[in-house]
Amino acid sequence: MKAHFFGEREGVLRYLTYLWLVLACTFPVFAAPAQPIGTITLLEGKGLLTRGATRYALSEGLRLEKGDIVELAEKSFAQAEFGPGAAVAVGPQTRMLLSTPGKGGGVELFVLQGQAKASAKGSDVIRLTTPDIVTTVANAATVLQSDASGVALFSENGETKAQETGGKPFVLKSGEFYSRKSEGKGETAPRPSSAFVTGLPRSFLDNLPSRLDKFKDVKAPPLKKVEDFTYAEVEPWLKSTVAVRKVLVPRWRSKAREPVFRKALVENLKHHPEWDPILFPEKYEEAARAKEAAAKAKAATTNY
Image 1 (cartoon, rainbow, N blue to C red):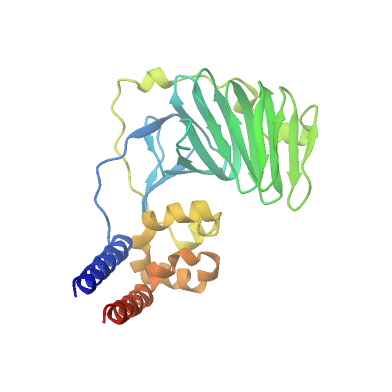
Image 2: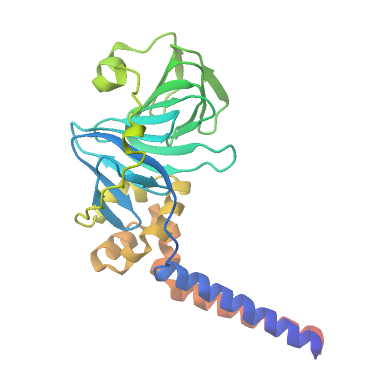
């Protein structure tokens, strides 16, 4: 009888834990404010900041947090700084997600599309990631371009470590250029192509000037909320890599309660199956109950 009692108790605990996880994915969780990891120190044109399920207008002096998405409009340019020796400039129509790699410190930027120039000095490290390649910038300046046609990488100065998705690591020496067309093979050249250079924002041709001191003792500007995003506007994010999609589920779970957004999630569920427990929690509740009943039956058989 004692063993049977403990079997039931453990089963109940497992079930309660499961219910807590379902509720956590269904209702907002209130947590302490996140610590800033960077600052927008330069903005020309317009941009958007998506934090959680809310969108704001991008502005100079705005503090960036882990999980933020920064997106620039046409003919726009921005620079973010993450420390005295770490800066990233982004060009028109660039879309990137901010994170921290954990081990080794530094900052990680997932570039969904667009152009980014990263400069890291001293102990600062910047990792630029796309669906096709991972690049580590340390004591170097590197320019990355990523879109549907492929990816390109230029090591402006210093050595740039990189690795294709599913491929072997390689190093670009100062001045070297790497490019890979979609579904094609990566190639390295001693200098960047003229098409690549002419396609860069003019600001990318110069060293990134640090403007961090200008905002050091200045209070961050208030966030200005803008219109909520639609499914179509964030569809490329929802259909991105598995790692990115998993980050977005808890941040955007409240959108599943909006009828139009929910309908689009259901229609495209095969592209982002991680939304299934959010959209149809009853399926998982039934599975958990069935599993619990089977465990109880097994425990009863074992003890009698």
